[in-house]
Length: 305
Length: 75
Image 1 (spheres, rainbow over the protein chains, first blue to last red):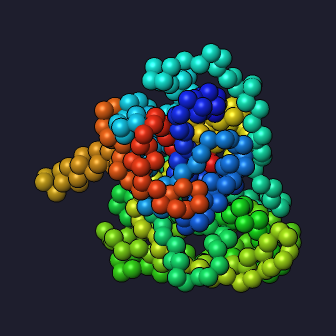
Image 2: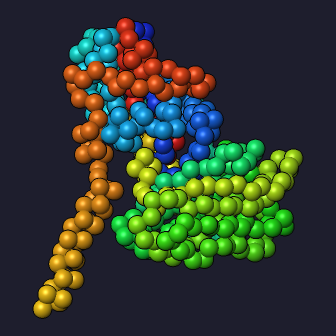
Image 3: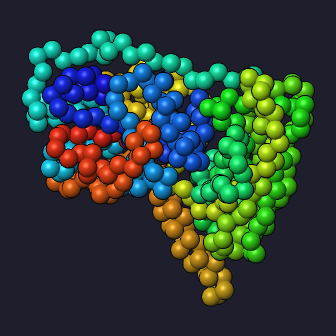
């Protein structure tokens, strides 16, 4: 979109990226933001990574715009000065967008090319060593579950984010496997201090639900520090329950600059229902291996252009 | 005989439901976008935020000029 933006902003057209829920959590280590403040941290990170001059807006945490756009990952609309949608597509496409602009506003004499953009793109944030703790094998077809952080029980950020997924059995009849992953948020530049103690969790279930193991503890790791997720698979049996589970997590939050290492206890509510706003995870994937530079699947920003 | 048939009947009911749910979970974006804005619609009347967290009305943002809005995220 950047080439079109560069050519048509001087003609009075306004361009916005609207930040939405992550389509592929864990790609490049990014995890789902839990608060609006964290979503805006993602916006700043996207600006840094893309080096774009396009303006940014962000959806609210109840995802009203994402819902209005059909919960799609990269859809695009063009709106006329009277607020009427004059173009709409499920996937952002710079060539289609340019044709829209030529039709609505008029052509430009010398369209900007991708090569001329020279956007200062940046790599993902560095982390301490990864690949030390083996990833678990998740059953296929796992879907993201609805979660809600219990913000009032903590006064520090969620340095460690949970990822909860359920298989088809969990989502359809309450019997199956749930994945519980504890992922360091790379934007906080923290790591596991393996000398301070492993992550621990405890699940409290409503009546009619059992989970096993309801308590868990992360592995002992010889390396003093790492940034790998800590993962668990839980067996679930639930009798048509709509109430959420409560998950309590205990860990030590230690920053990479070695200025703090503090014990943290945080809580989440988890519903055994699919979260339609968040796509499936991309465990261990690197956006540099996906799509093309300047966009592609890795940045979720559509095709380069 | 009815007792033998009942589980089979249950399976015939449950299997398509599961398939629908599975398909619902995996609907491609082009299909999902069918519930999104169409050409000729007014822009959705929602309030989102700017990059500083200040509330902004989508209709106010779009008023008075051509506007392009593209959904996206880091991954």
